[in-house]
Length: 404
Ligand SMILES: [Ca+2]
View 1: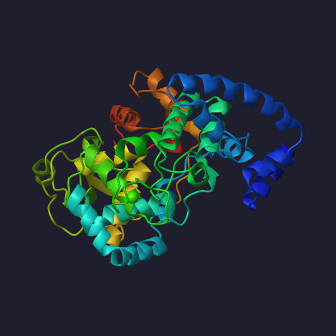
View 2: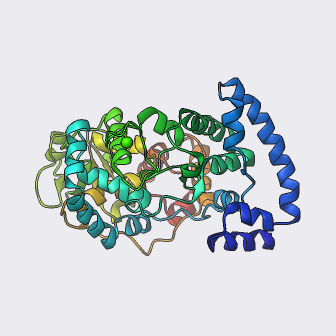
């Protein structure tokens, strides 16, 4: 284990994964044999799927077990990161200012993408900023090696092997050479961190050189590809994703919930307002979400929010992306502060909350330690049943109540 951690420090220091693997002694020597077994089996799958042996063997020529991929994959944080910490990083002042600078620098490119795909430049800049800090952290891992390690590791084998087949198809087409197919350890590639299957489906050639090149320093193809993806997911141009709102005294918190969509007039009649005092604008099905409960900011979210959620399933990601795009466009920071002194819950405690709610007959959906919209609804139902404020927010106190 100590050896493993040392190896990881070495790889942070900049040695290539292959060099790191070469320095590992006993554990890797054993694992490598198993890796070869996995690779030979997957080779048959790939050949049956139409990948030529020439493409496969060239793509896998120096691919080894890499401690980088495996440690990153297994060292998921034990505590669930509070949404405000996520937003602090994602919507930092330097990211906002870089986004504004890029808006000027790449104005004509962004306008041409917007005309073609109907996705505004601030949203694209926010994606670019969130994914790779505007292209500055596009990863250093050979995508085949990244995915091969995930597949070999076993826990996400089906997913990783499907993406590997897509990556091999990209190489077979000659869209990029294996030397240039570089990305993150998860297998996401280029400026907007597309998985290989996403690239095959949504990648486009924006700069007109006949190739869909999301790996180049020129971000044109990657940004247009992200715009194309959002468009295909149903993005509506010139419509906000949502906005922070204020609630009137005595508001019924049971109405809050991502699945509980209503018309703007429904919310306006009940006294909901944007933080600048304006009425909630009519942009179709609108829900209210309270990601940190009644003591944090509340948001009205429109259909574009759901488009972002399909792009990346995390609510923290979707809110950060939306808010970053607003800030790049010149909007103010959030008006309500987050409950920053709240004790973060661990994945295990969230799991326990779900299990205890389930035991009491509340439908939490899948009991997986992740509190999605279904679990939030179950918390609200429980809160209503005990006469508490139904904001759906999971806290240590809620867990203590459930344990009784
Ligand atoms: Ca191109």
